[in-house]
Image (cartoon, rainbow, N blue to C red):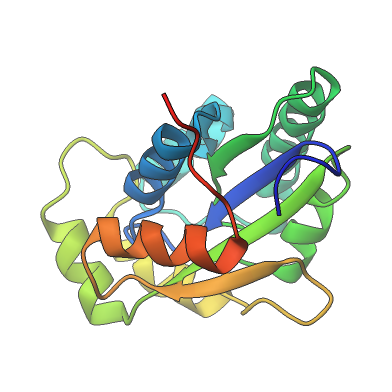
Length: 176
């Protein structure tokens, strides 16, 4: 995969609680690429809505996804490949992200709802309540043939998940 064809944005995707942040941070550290957490791009109204237990709709997500797309493009314009988290649950959301001026490669993290619910029950200080997990799984659309990406199970330790991702994508960690 490499950077010969230009900057790449690896979008680590899936429902809340699947391990996006842990996985993305480990990949960014291994590759030496900048990391961004999609939650940081949410407008305050979205965070307030989710904190209140109200699921976001497509209209709520549109400006958030546009902000992420624009960040990817800005980093790519500087010649920088990136790793970021984003639920990217629907094909239409990923279409918007693919409008970025970079190669956008999706890494779908896959787990059953019971595993994710158990992880979420141990999480502290996150605005997404476990009550919204069902809506996340209901919205989740698997990657399709027209999307650049891979799907990886997170039923193994994070280091094994990262190894599988880097192997499948042919990415070699930078040597410090």
